[in-house]
Length: 364
Image 1 (cartoon, rainbow, N blue to C red):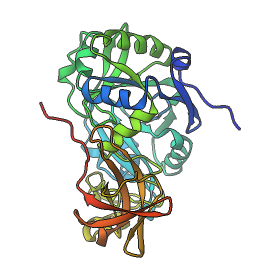
Image 2 (image 1 turned 90 degrees about the vertical axis):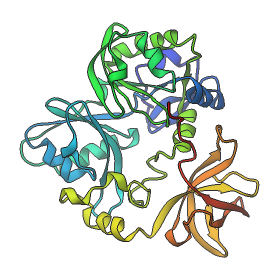
Image 3 (image 1 turned 135 degrees about the vertical axis):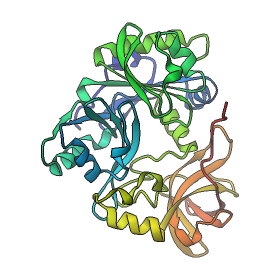
């Protein structure tokens, strides 16, 4: 077994957290407990180490042309200081990866899923042409995520910058924070308000500790992968390898908002344009159990005696206290209110198709 990689924060929390292998990294799955951490993010704020994510910088006169060819969203709409959710696809419409694109003054920063960095970089370089520079800068960055309704209040204690001026999917790369300079983005993967903070790896341990110190009165907790997964699931944010994969298209996954066929040609456009116009053969839906049982990943889904798909993610929702799941099923069975069955360890359990997301944060 190859040696697991560790983030710059490993030494800070190695004795405080339960650590697990994840995408080649040794990462905390929980600190005080998944439910407690989940509730902290929903009601106060939680701090995550997401330094395992990959970052690639693309620059040069032909950088935009490359992004337009590689990604499904329209990168030409990006102005400096803005971020965009996008997807890279194969010619058959299957997903290479989903990512964030940050538009800097003279370059773009792509944030990639940890398990996909090597193949993504290879894919990007394979399709590059013209005057463009591609740099894997993953080792030059650490990333923290402070998420929850009190995130702005807590982070304000460590900076003189006007964080309220950073709108959703906007960022500043010059924020003086706890004695260092960081890129601060109003974004996240929990369904809550909050920030993702990109900074030098050597500064990350200090900033981590300062955020927790600043948030002590507000009940801010360090959080692990377990709560990150339950939070993103309740908000129905996709996880690569479950809701997205080389076998699942963005349209099937309900991400048509990030697919813009009208922008011009890109890899996978023909298939995705047809699915967006005519509908895809499968659809990702929310399900809620009627019978007792939790719908877990890869459990088969049935309509009568016919297998119609499978669960991609499922759990007992910490917020809703209900057994719910996301399932990729044949479109003809995907109408809200339809009754289906989930095979839970050899027993068929009734469930119903429900609207998603399961959780929306309250508006102020």
